[in-house]
Image (cartoon, rainbow, N blue to C red; front, side, top):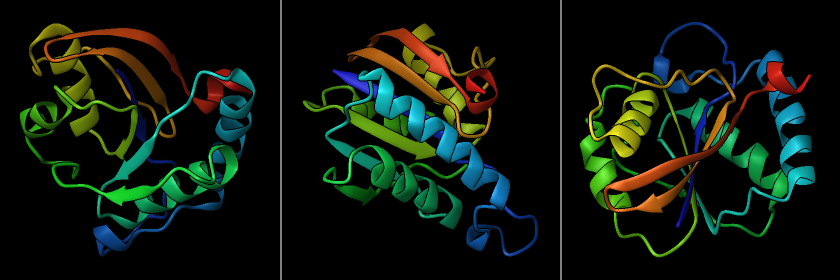
Amino acid sequence: MDLFLIRHAHAEDGPPDHLRPLSARGRTQLKVLGEFLSRCGRFDPEEIWHSPLLRARETAELIQRRVHPSVPLREAEHLTPADDPRLLARRLANLPRRVAVVGHEPHLSALASLLVTGASEPPRFAMKKAAVLALEGGGSQWIVRWHVWPDLLA
């Protein structure tokens, strides 16, 4: 199975945290990322999951619109910044389809570290805003396929 971990793009500052929308900079980041993902032919999720926070949902919607308009979006549990990554790792272990997961730091770095190394601490990955980390595998055997972010693509 393929798994795509995506950190939300740059968001506006200010409270309340769960209602922070993407900034103009974040939308530009997603334009660059979306163009790359469309061209590369290696981003092919069957579903896109996102956290309940607005900036993650907007990131998921823009990626869907720019890359795979027919792929369903789903709000998923265990994707907020403070969630225990083991909860989502258990859900992903035997998932039979390719999924993109849009979330937050420090959760995504801890999740990626857990999936690839077996331990979430210390984190072995740094997920920049609007970054995609593509993993392949399942259960407790995951490997990194590729990792990109907008500054790398510009």
